[in-house]
Image (cartoon, rainbow, N blue to C red; front, side, top):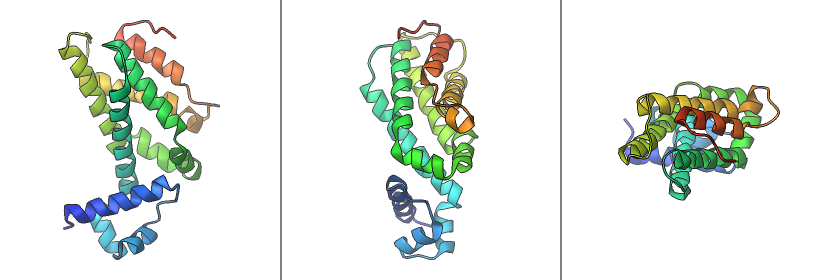
Length: 187
């Protein structure tokens, strides 16, 4: 069983490879860590699991940064957070390199149930609950269910180029989020 420090070191090294726009090669990663491949797999799971962890952590950082920079209250705040997150993701050169190199792996990791969707939905539910608790938002679904729906809407529109569209459809996603929050969006 790996220690938390060993697992963290492997994830951090994989993250540095991702940020350098390098392919995540498990043999190279094991070599950089000074361990065998079998040990690395025991520490972090398979390549897709590790890449999912790296991307989920990046997703959380992106949401937290957007939350700290967003303005407004209630629906306006939520729309600002989502707009910031989607624009940040769209402009990420590291993510662009990954999606160009491995589009199907990325689609599987980002758009199917897993760590990336889970953290996105969890943070969205947190944002919704905070706004509801502050009396700034009224919703008819649970924050978790609405959060999952909002994340899926964003994914489909943000990753539209991977699904055959010409470009990301961020404005459409924001319009749909506004509709589900019961407001009209000022563009």
